Image: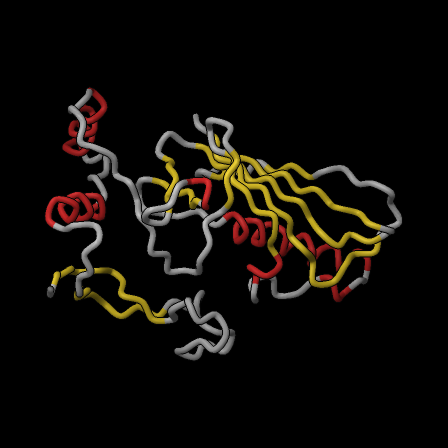
Length: 242
């Protein structure tokens, strides 16, 4: 399966003191989902681990790159799957390293090395690149969530045996239908010109996302301006007003 490898450096808020001149890399095989391998390298400088080097491999035949509208991959990409999920390797890495720092703090009594990694996480991440299946190395796309990016659906194609097999699975109750967002985007691409601006009304349930809310669970943010504590989920209807 095609591999998309994210590489980046994670700067610790508080360096870890070490007596070792070098330490081996840690390898993790998550074993589920598209994240198939993680490599963590401690970067030691004068008896201190100030940074961690990460290599995160995402694999799957249903992965593709997402670029900002009008930009080439060399200007920055995101990587996502055909269900519409966009991967954020730094957040995946933080979920892995948080319990490690907690454990190391307990073992060494260097209690300050553990902190809330998810607070202002982007400022701790640098030197981010994606290596694509063809070997090209490109930078990560820039911008906070929600991203307004252009997803190239490609041209229409003939029905093949996998499409027909999917119909059998769907009728058997063992398969899943094509994601609705693909139908909406495909239909929109026939009706709208890409440079036109439209007002769209989104109808759905108001959903409070505690993961995007501040620690006190209040209903608005003061730090990460791009993150909405309230979201529309699930979406019931999309209407193009003009």
